[in-house]
Length: 109
Length: 147
Figure 1: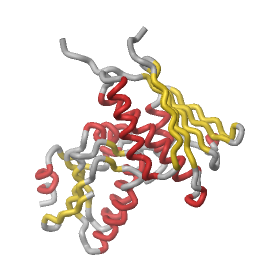
Figure 2: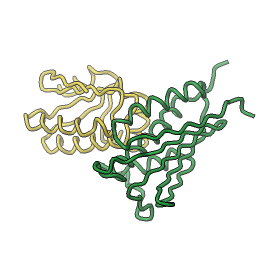
Figure 3: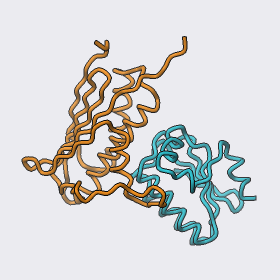
Figure 4: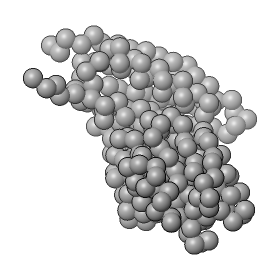
């Protein structure tokens, strides 16, 4: 997992798997960034071959935190597996998805 | 007669989340080797149900101080994949399980549902001779080929 800041937007690039191994770290990082007043997040999932229920749960938990602070979490370049899972679990209704990174970042402009 | 070689692999693994990635990598390599024409969506589904099952055992069945062990058996028979997970931890009470309300933004509770949704068979036997046994079976979908 890699974290970059592009202006006010935090870009989180997740690796090949977003699961119970990664989810606690993801939640801790987002919480710390929100406490530092960052509330606009883009999660780049281009490399992510597998997201599971723990990854989905981490995204929902963090979305609740950022929404309380008038922020958002947007998904960029979801892999086919991630897109399939978001649709199966209905998370595509609450997580806005973008096919390219620039569009996701620019959506906060 | 499917023309596919049947394979059975049994792995005795520590019930630790760090094992998830090597287990997943092993499964994907095994499928690539023995079922090379499997559809991408099917590999994803099989990876996910194994991930969910193993995670549940690590997180809910054992306590960290238990140093628990999981036996994972992978069977590929023709176009059927079966996964059997055996543990000696705290049994899951399937009678108390409820289908999650997916219209709600849930932070947890999707793991069992995903296993049931993505598998053709979900059989859980609690405390059978001191062992909990979860069996997941799924038909292998083959990728369609042009021409």
